[in-house]
Length: 174
Image (tube, rainbow, N blue to C red; front, side, top):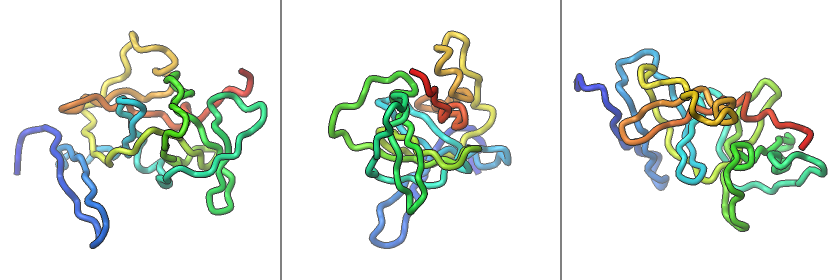
């Protein structure tokens, strides 16, 4: 067993005919590892704890909501259940995506029920060690600190750990 504490990539094969899925792993000897479903907004690497993720979907038909704040992209019909879709780009202050750009839905469970987070693209499921975690520095914009739990310092990049409860709270006035 490798005693080095570093992140490694391991390929996990899916059923015949399916795509190969990559899973980034950390040192699996730690019982306290946390799993994150990752995604991208531009080149920013973010993640949500896997236990909070209900499902990941391709672009869904959105119904716009009159008078909704810009962070609410609309509502989606998820097998008969109406789910609010939050535009994470708008929520986190990113520039608007160009018209016609495909986006993905990461449906997460919150205290108020499922909410869809609109993201640019989906990443991998990764395991991270707790000792790689650090709270967001005070120099980070307060709005970003308010919706993240902190940062994981991975070998080749930083992972912003999204606080789904805070990120899905949208202001009604705007």
